[in-house]
Length: 113
Image (cartoon, rainbow, N blue to C red; front, top):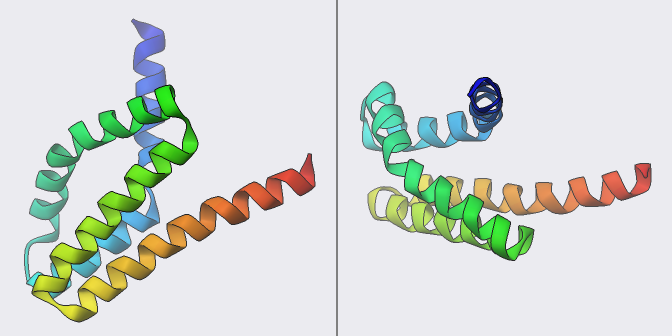
């Protein structure tokens, strides 16, 4: 039980990232909604999606999990486009940086090994 708690806390700390803060900032500015409420409700809604992503990764590998993440980002961008073209475009650009970041990280880590 202790190991599960330690690993779960580590995972929770890993999930928190500036990309999410940037996304929620873009979304709440465009919609004039409460950043705290959006963060809480969005986190609850995201739990099954995180589980799906982890299971995809476990069974099918990184490409499948990354593909799922890209699809969810594109879905978010399309939803935001209905609210604001600027917010949709910003969300899409952030999604592109996700893809670019994975590629660049892979290249750099291969140089170091």
